[in-house]
Image (tube, rainbow, N blue to C red; front, side, top):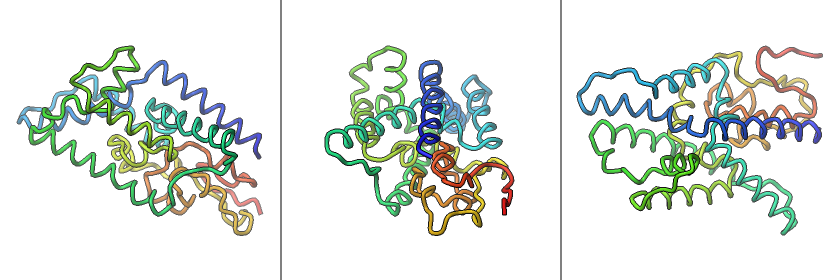
Length: 258
């Protein structure tokens, strides 16, 4: 089982690295498309299609058809979070002998997951009211985009730089800290309808008695085939499928092996 987990993690890490190098700005570009709509509404202008909306529409369609695989495999910000979390886990294990997965209690995670919806609402309301122009230089995503293109942020982005540093610190303390708690685009993805065939399911009768490995390994603490049918929090990282000792978890139709 550990061999399978390692294989899944390596494949995922390789895909993440490719997207991080080739397309680090997909997240910010997609959200720019969302913002362009609300900025046009706030300015009482007609909404015109643009290149940002091309990316936004593409990612939303992919999410509806296949789930949040973009978040789990292609988002550079999410990949940064995974790298920092794994680095922290490595240091904890090697230097302090703490091999147990670290993070926040399940109750905290579920409560903090709601914060990103507040952030999304605030940003969109700011676009509509014209307040968004006063937030220039405060965006940690803009700072991240600058850094991934080899540009250092200007002094006007000091607030955004500080926020990025704080977010990176949070990434060390909880798996997918930003994606779960703070990502406005993640909030958009989470409210999108996902076709049933793309949801993760498990064959409960075949589960080992009292086994909760999938829920413990899930960054969002989801009950597979319970919460997943009603929650958009699943980022399709496939950690649950890798950790399941009986290979009970997969997408599509559940087949009873008994």
